[in-house]
Image (cartoon, rainbow, N blue to C red; front, side, top):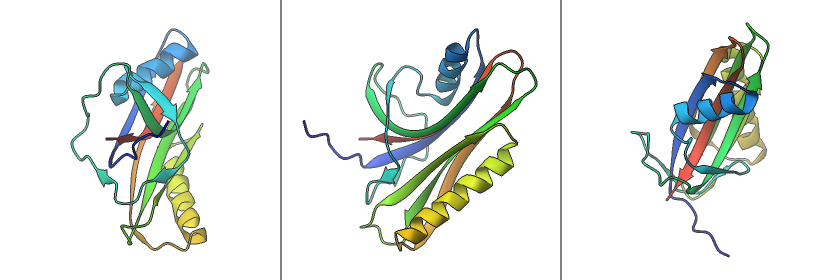
Length: 157
């Protein structure tokens, strides 16, 4: 089966509390706008020429199979801080693939964002690709009872 290469992408993030760890993760997906789809976790390559959809959320059919590179984390430790981030290295040469990196940790949001951006820089460096820009999205959540965070790059059409 050949799957069409996506031509567009958008960034999404969310956090939530829930009844269980899985319910909290589900809530974070709903908060990010992708909760009623079937996420297909992918590795971290942005197709050449893929363009950002700058006004998400994108209406997606319920149950759609949606490729996404994402970071997530959940916890049932009250007071714990969870953070998740993704970053995309957009190459200067639009004919080359971009690079997506994901990172989540039990720490402040700024630390996670700094780390994921550095991961993009290093990944593009080993590919010998000049970076036009780095896009990122992140979220953070202080756990009440059971919480989760999600940040992703969603590929579409």
